[in-house]
Length: 281
Image (cartoon, rainbow, N blue to C red):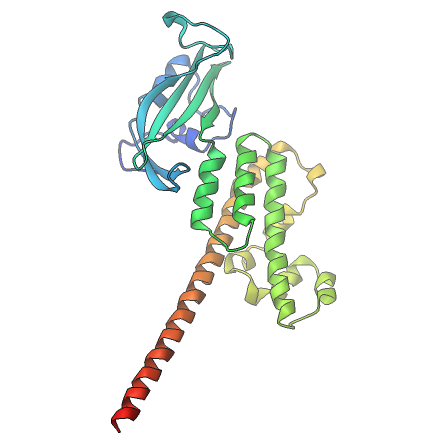
């Protein structure tokens, strides 16, 4: 999410937008720190799943948890059946369609945790990716948002596996283009190590992919060799790399479409001019 211009606060007070579920929010360790989240008056620019477009989310106020199992009196409204001392939500309103986005928090063991959101972070990110990286006939943006959703739920090894799958899909797609152009055979391609494959596919791979062949060395580590901590330390870097690859691929695709349309338009224009010249002579 992009922060709209406003009062500058520390990162620890805004990182709940990007935080996965059940991760403690840095710097907030007391019940009274909840007020730092609730009093944040800034708006954020991000995707709205309801209206299907980028929008500005405006802070709307606190939302308390409501339990269908426990009747609460006003003096205990900051408590609920989760058992924590403070449970609260912070609402934002879409400036286009006026639907709400609510983040839910829980205070426990000297930590404030994000325990949920509605719409889900995955829905917001998926919509944003599908809008920004609309690769035709491709499941990659959807798989990338699934990786983010798994990360948000703390399933880091699963999220990491999705990133590897996406990276391998991009390489295989480039290989299929090269084989179709008779640049080499599939058998020859499979004999090569990855670094050599990337060299062979130079014309078909985005520049940021060519410049970072080490990325696959990280991604190709066996899942059984990795801990959740290993996956967490690498995820954000690998996610940004793959996002850059997809954005570069999309820019190239759009540029090629525009160049073809421009060329076709100029051809028609030239034919019309030549026809007019011939008619006047």
